[in-house]
Length: 127
Image (cartoon, rainbow, N blue to C red; front, side, top):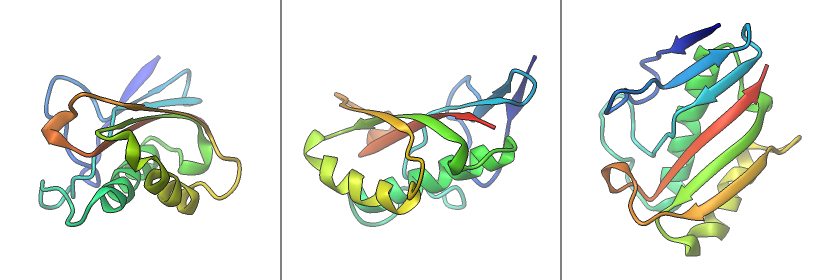
């Protein structure tokens, strides 16, 4: 069984996909990639990579919470960076959000991200 996650506390999908899916009787949460867009305005947050990472993680947090989970439940993240030179900045912000029991993570440079974002983050959580 699976159910769709939908929250106004994260940006709405810009295509035929869900913000997230709760599966396996509520034990697993799979999120769509989240970018640094403020859900209230639909615009990217002001600043650079750190601000976009922070907002992407806030959006991810909102999707997880709407699905009955939290950042503490995340076991794997995949991060797509516009520029892999932003890896250190990514780590700085991640360290603020994942203080204990850090998830496994992959980070890659992508040729282009939705809406020309600087970063996109997706997660898998076990609740």
